[in-house]
Length: 375
Image 1 (tube, rainbow, N blue to C red):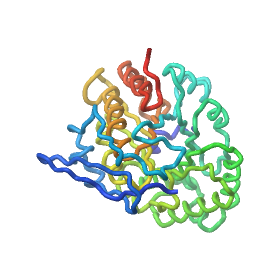
Image 2: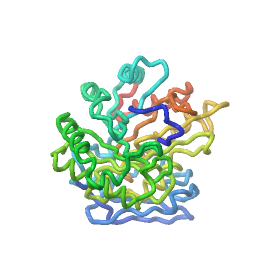
Image 3: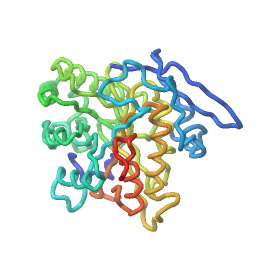
Image 4: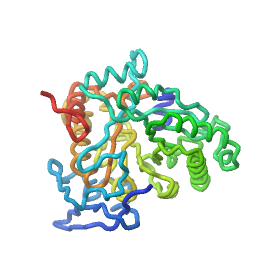
């Protein structure tokens, strides 16, 4: 999450690589297909990720939504990680939840789950560089059937933080890193570790030096391996903008899941879910399993129940696109909503309007996202 939108919020190997792409041209429309094969190479995007007028799944036009074109060749290869669902059949659903008036985080999450009629698969948490794991109620999360998706910000998250990436690379923080690794190993349950996210932006002080970032990532990864923390799944997670993602990529041997964050609101300009994420997903499809780690929209004043710019229409479009395109074609295995109104500027809640809440219930009760349809 960008610093200005969440400054008051503190905590909260490999598999098949892309072999080829089938491009079908008809009347100026390009239909993309990413077979789940086992040769090397990463996916390439159709155009710059900052553009929003591309054809194909990011066009905002006809994308085959409402029907699935999944075939046997679309599905993950045999070495797809066993802890992730087959995205042709199922997608993990999660959230970060921090709502005004909540008694505490866990109570608020349970209230949200009770209202939805189901529990989340994933729960996003936040740790500063020197915060000690576990301190966000991870044991309770696991008992409730949720897997922690732990954000661990790097040193120098803000310019006022004097800790730096060179400290990691010099070995000065090895004791801290090994202590965290041992704690996560002792936890004994799956942890999705989103390390030093949104590094491609300008809002964190650990951004701006790709070589130092990659070196630090690899050192942390190596120390965790030495500690035997095999229950940790490594989630590399840039922001959807700006582009230039690849220059921060640590390499396939150091990443298990490629995540991404993106937000749409009336201040920055409304985008549909598809417009927001399709260029990124097309670019990385086939390299690793994909996950939307932070997403939300804010309808703003004057929102109407249906129509462009509303939270309801955004969620409806997200529902359709993930189920029919992003999951089966691009290997998106999970999505987490940034469900909070405790930010500097925006109300990102799924229930910011009655219509948005109805759209959210339609999504969470869809069996594809692990839900049960209402009786």
